[in-house]
Length: 348
Image 1 (spheres, rainbow, N blue to C red):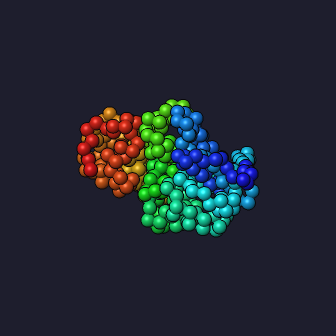
Image 2 (image 1 turned 45 degrees about the vertical axis):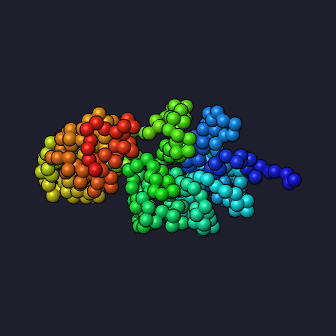
Image 3 (image 1 turned 60 degrees about the vertical axis):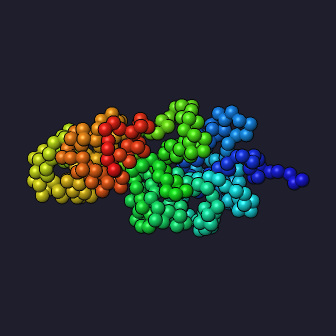
């Protein structure tokens, strides 16, 4: 009998699901450690004889040691070359990367992903790992997400991908993509929930002191936060005024008065500094506020529409679908704090 080596990875029981995290260096360390902790804790909390998961970290580089953006190295179980030679079944493949890895994605790795995905039950990416899946053509025609700050770049580089910057994670078929950094933990909890049930996932969330279903989409995609980046003081007053008057009629003339400037000048300021128009900005802020209301629950959609400046539920629904690609009801079902959704929402 041949002697096992460390690169062989852990032994896999007949009932175990092999979860492989593929790291593309320099990887964001939390993209690896976050999901890994979820699966590892699922094993620790499992009461059966055999732990449900066999978790392995595979380095896409030549060295089993995986460089991270933090400067703290991670040691994998094997390299991708070892993985190719062993060719063991993979239940769930998770691709983790980092901003620095996007500039030099190895064609060998991409080719392996393209082929290996055909035999994997679930193919996932954390944050900018979506770029590797997209490069392999695995997300063509599919809805996908990534870190909000990289969503436009993903859409520009891979126009066949239906990029949605809003959700924490997205499932399209057997492909799962997640948003920035800690969203990988949310995705891992969802994967465990699929395998072991929501009660097991809830216990994990409690153990990790996390929401089972985080109350919201990508908070980082916030229009208000993005608006503040590099914004001149001239837009401070109208921006704050918009936030305080979402339930009333807001016109560009009103905003110009608040900014103490002309309409033409205000429009130029918005276009120059925010790459949008005042009207589009107002709608973005309104919809962001609606999302927060949907996440909190407890109000009817009619009430939410009125409180945020929409004349009717139909007007809100059309704006919501146009911007987010889902109806308010669908959004609430995904992201509401209460799993039962919102009272009084009867929309398609």
